[in-house]
Length: 344
Ligand code: NAD
Ligand code: DAU
Image (cartoon, rainbow, N blue to C red):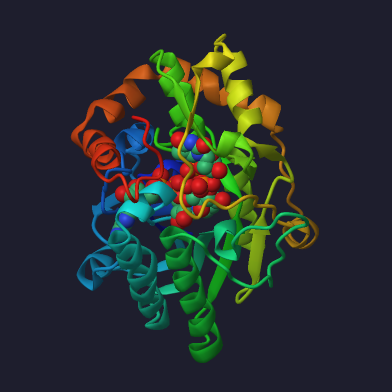
């Protein structure tokens, strides 16, 4: 099988490419990535010489770049490429519309023209908005609350429309929050782990009351594997672990794992439009495609803390580079829209 993975130099895309070569060594993978601040080829150093792997630097929203990656055609496109961080979308929404909406349009056009036999759109539970009780189902209405989730919703709606109107073969997934090795240190879990390792405080919004559902990298890769081989065209699948935690509970687990005390938590200004709770019902994936998560949060968070302890050179470089410094400065200079006023 020949797969085009877009955004394969990011957190989950790189985990997925390594998962594929481990389980299916004969598969071919082309990785098309723009290498934004979140793209990092070091995530793929183990496989860069693999003859079945090819890297193309490029933008999914540019037809020319896509054609280069698709010159000989592929069986499937798995789209991980996106602008992904909610706080950045509050500061700079434009890049989100360009990649998460226009990029999807270009990918769909390529599939419609027969350059790939199908496409899997990796999307998020955030498109459904927040839910204080109960769960989101695959057919729950879209009520996105951030420029990030609105852009992802736009891309997902295009996927649906192309499938209905042109019969373009697409499958959409809505996943809960990912965590694990190689996650860029702007997101809650790696930010808190690395700040504490640097002996810096951790900035918690809204007293840590908001709730997220968490899935470990490998479990998400296994879900996409099932969908790739057994998923039905035109279907939507929620991906969830059922493990829903308040952010304060996560902060406490990380403090405990690193032997730090609670005074390292800094309560900061809340994120505007901060969704209170996400929870997805993933029965369809579990029953129809015989998938279930294997890594419990208590175990996954320990493995994740250990990975960041073992790989300081990976994240220190990211927190010292120009992209990180620019992001930090935006917080400090953009008071009105800044999700938090504490230095990251
Ligand atoms: P990430 O931010 O770590 O990586 C994104 C990758 O996409 C980077 O390598 C970046 O260089 C690349 N990219 C960005 N714009 C591009 C463009 N225009 N063309 C080509 N490449 C581009 O992302 P992640 O956290 O691994 O998320 C992967 C996907 O999963 C995203 O679509 C995201 O919306 C979705 N998702 C993420 C989570 C989560 O918790 N992180 C949960 C559910 C769904
Ligand atoms: O639900 C899936 C989504 O999960 C993905 O689609 C997004 O790409 C991904 O970024 C993630 O979005 P969240 O906003 O849930 O993730 P983040 O790590 O930014 O924040 C998790 C929670 O922690 C959220 O309630 C906000 C809070 N938080 C976050 C940061 C960065 C803090 O309290 N302090 C922080 O510094």
